[in-house]
Length: 606
Ligand code: G6P
View 1 (cartoon, rainbow, N blue to C red):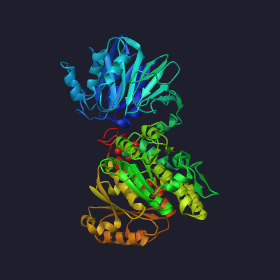
View 2 (cartoon, rainbow, N blue to C red):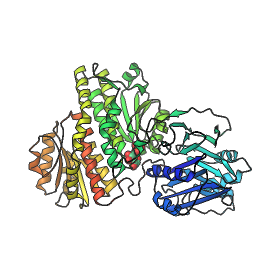
View 3 (cartoon, helix red, strand yellow):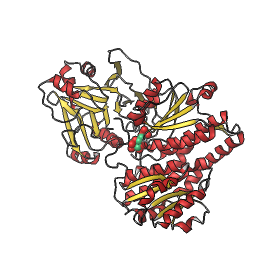
View 4 (spheres, rainbow, N blue to C red):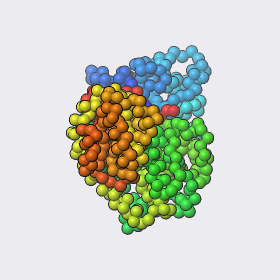
């Protein structure tokens, strides 16, 4: 949560900072602010609300500095007010700082600093005063000294008015990327704001502090030792981070799915051998055989993808598999040992709870691998291997294409493990051939977007909804229900349909619609009976059914047909109509689809 950006070079900093903030807005959108140095003076402008509001406020403010920092906030400590917006300043406005993270010992530090007037209620402001207290001409040293006293997490950027050729950055637990241009540098919480200018980046590691001047980056650690950094190349394109004519990022990302799914599986299977090969696993065949349990750790939408992984690992590889919501994992006594393979699944690779779970699982001696989208992210770095999901930049807060690719990677792993333990060549080949047909089938679903919109118009006024599925489609309805809550604010629940009689049946009524998945698989007949029960209780019903299933129409007028596929692959298709259904309801209700209230895409605090 919170996004930071900084620029130093020959260009006007302000437009770069504002454009960058827009790309980072998914990280928080409570307030935003910039600070630019011009002629030895820092000008700071902050505003409550979105970047657009800040941009409007800056319209009449001609700022032409070549160095600056900016921030978009997701409030943790202190309300959503202008005083709490970053940048924070000290030394009569000469020192300015932006911070992403949490300073846990801020009260203690505040007491130690004594008689200083604080402008905000944030934990971040302590940092700028602490740095000021150490400042005696060397800004980097002051930042280093200050950070030695700090407990918590930070990704930060600091500037000092008298030195227009120096930007100091530091990181501990919150991501920070430095982009290398020609005689210019960019810093940001992730690579997306940097993409228009350069693909060459340096990822700062925890405990590193960088001094950036137009001539280069000098990195040291908290013990003042020099650290040599590698320059890496980002694969994402600038275009991918744009809406490309779609009304919202979410819609664009839903429509990206056939393409990015291909990117996820390309080069990762061998049809002749009927198996998958995921190079990043970094495990010998012997080690793979030694595994007796798999634990999948994730949060939010990623945890529903993980549940699909559980079905696949158990069915294809006969390995007992558990899914753990990361925020619960570390507060239990998880039974993890050197025979456990843990996958941490995360789009951002920065989710604080998932990261903490990774560390705990490593401490307990498990094999810990990542399934991550953002290259160079903390989870990608801290796991001992794993697989990038190649979904491209996902900027809508509600996850869509990353979810699909998480499922794709989990299925590939299940096929790989399955082939070494259980399933035949023919089954492996059948699965892979079916996977290869998925993009084309996704397109068939996407072509029905207008029809789904018409159905959404009928359901948009309900205050509640119940999603029902069975077997492999139970996680799919959990994800469908999650999407509806997240972006439309309609209350919804998801139930395994067989469990209805034990509670949820009491909810059924004409004002309580049911969204059910009744595709043709081994549980079809049972699901059909469940839907009959719903119909008898007069709840409106929207159904997903397999193309050609005319009987579905006897149950409701609102049927969305999806192409047939192998049962384990159904989630790859069935999720898409539910994404579109929620998307259109959110649009019809006038919700802020890409930035739903109170949420952030990357949850870097516990
Ligand atoms: C937040 C986002 C969700 C996402 C979850 C996990 O809650 O709003 O869309 O599923 O975090 O994020 P991750 O980056 O770890 O997949």
